[in-house]
Image 1 (tube, rainbow, N blue to C red):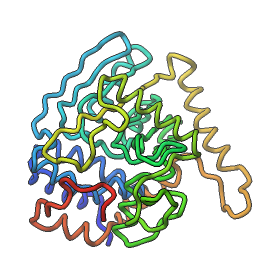
Image 2 (spheres, one colour):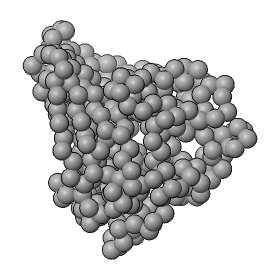
Image 3 (cartoon, rainbow, N blue to C red):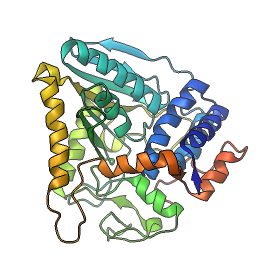
Image 4 (cartoon, one colour):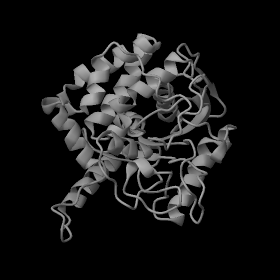
Amino acid sequence: MRVSKQELKELITRKLHKAGLTEEHAEGVADVLVHADARGVHSHGAMRVEYYAERIAKGGTNAYPTFTFEKTGPCTAIFDGDNGAGHVAAKVAMDEAIAMAKENGLAVVGVRRIGHSGALSYFVQQAAKEKMIGISLCQSDPMVVPFGGSEPYYGTNPIAFAAPGHGDDMITFDMATTVQAWGKILHARSKNETIPDTWAVDKEGHPTTDPFQVNALVPIAGPKGYGLMMMVDVLSGILLGLPFGNKVSSMYHDLTEYRNLGQLHIVINPAYFTSLSGFLQNITNTMQDLNQIKPAPGFKEVSYPGQRSKIREEESESNGIEIVDDVYDYLVSDVVHKNQYDKKDPFAK
């Protein structure tokens, strides 16, 4: 069914506040989730609310965190999220990074001890809206077989990037270092749909089209994706003195425990490297150039990175956002959670 962006934000805010977050933090999480749903990334949208609510209610998310920001150099800092809602901590940390990059041209901010932070595109777009380049990467729990391996070691370990053009022009991409994000598997399960056989493997390591038989995901482009997810783990885990690799906490292992996840924000101020107006114009030119390229057979057009998501987001303003009926029924109910995620095998049905 379809709901307006405002209604969806209000429903998510109400549910997370009822689970135990402050209203301010509940609204902050809702902002990021609605952003994802509006752009068609439902794997990081409202379908995640019940999981978050259960973790909050059981104490695995700090409902009253004390955020701290410590500068460690002119362009470097550590933001400690005190295991609060990851969406809120990452958002506030990006604001700090933007301020630092405005002053010194560059900011590298390590975000320590947070929960799951959702769609990284939200945070890099914070920077792009301030005419900065934004890069963000974060670790996640192990559910990916390394290239040539048969047991999970790394997480989906996503990377996001955004660069501004003139006006509202913006190039954005947000990708998992796996062929597909785990949330996409969950979305397929929620709609009882099959998945491509290139996304994941079953317990025997064979490709599967059944989302309920998935036992591990696979790296994008084989050894190249494997290398990228290793890089993300180093920069958002080891670099910040946090658990890494298969030592990263599971999303479902114990919802009463904090996750202690890491994320890294990098913000670059183009004005410190070139003419800002020239940079913005060239990003806009890039977007236009890509749109004008002759499409290959089977394609209608060439889109610049983030263009299709932007179109969906614009359409959601008038058409609303489509979400699964079961998710909507949960959001409008009085139930905080149904106790279905704690100690769950992440690959279980």
